[in-house]
Length: 301
Length: 297
Image (cartoon, rainbow over all chains, first blue to last red; front, side, top):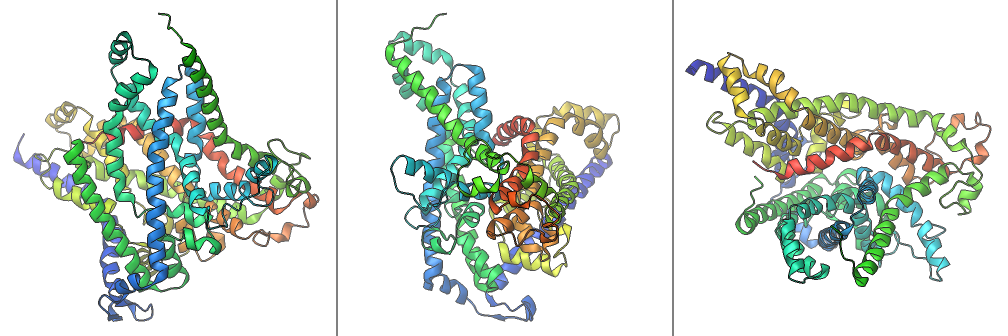
């Protein structure tokens, strides 16, 4: 193979890779650069980015001085952490239970049906949930009243809104999240179970001493990698489910950025809030990937 | 081999089957409820008498939706978006993934490019700068605002790259010896071999474009340009029928059978239908996609 051929190959690689890269530069890198200047300026649409004045850290100071943004930060952390924990524990438990089911068609049917909500958008699911959780005659409240309870305004009272978010998020995703753990479970050597059974271990002991240690690496890994998400409380979900009455418990950073930026046109402050979130997330992702590599020997990038 | 079942094991299994069954029902009951509402007369729906079976069976809500101009407008916008967006995504993903799948010693600049691609995945420019960019490019109210900004999905690039890496290098080497160029190798050898992962990414991209509503909401000023999900959201937000095309209201004889609730249910169900139709494929390829994505090279 001569050198010229190699060079023409490399040239072709460069050409191929630059076509998508141009789009990325325009729609991802350029906004990063302009975002930094918008956040440090008092951006006015009439003046353009270059015509607006620099104001230094003004907008970033405002993040910590405003109740609204501190509330959004607090809500984001609470909701995101609860979701991370729930989306870890529930799928593991369900995977363990499903693993005990030996009737193949039953298992397959269960999986097919539980994946379904994963594929529907939050617009659709929010519409369905608004209906079912409605305080006047929603399906769930009808059930609660039939059992003698009092109807609950799930999407309108601050005392239950966060719980509603977490539970509905688990409901949407558990079927899909279970796949990873079921795959991990099939990777466990069956002879371990046979050996344990001969030694007199029951099913419970087998689960405790073989199954759980067998998938513990996956669980640790999933936990570490989800750390990068502690500032992602799920914009699509919250935006489609919340309303003014539950801002106190449900307004998150992303919904605040949307309201400030798109609705109130406070471009600079909104950009600063978004940038703050992106920077913290970047540090967390870098840290958690380092940890994943160090403790689990797993390289994401 | 006959397994021995202890008494506690049997009790556990009974509860396990019951629990799993209940959980499964929980995932489909809401959809059945919506379906039942969409086929019911409004009087029963509004009185909260419908649970899982239609009461006062009627197709009025569906007839109303199908006669509603705005529903079809937004349906067409979504179709247009899919026809433009899915092939666009696919071509760009393949173009990025193929060179990136080469070894560092063959394509020396690869490691720099990898970082340029991956960094986009971990650092988000944010809503407003992207919005201002789309605005300044004059893409507001254009179908391209739904296609161009999300043209390259780096997650899909990684998926495709990992698949290409699974193809034996000997295939490429023998083609190179025969004097083939890289574009020929990609088109004639790699793409035919990568059919399963192309199917996976096509589905990912289809689901993305079908389900996303945010771009439509911020980039479209004219409601006629809303994609389906954005339109559904605007209907959800306004609890009355004012957003629906009221001009054909009188043309519908059985309008009394229609109310906000069963109408919304009918619209929801129509927009779920395409997902249900491709569901068997979705399930198969999303699972393989998930497994592929987790095997990193």
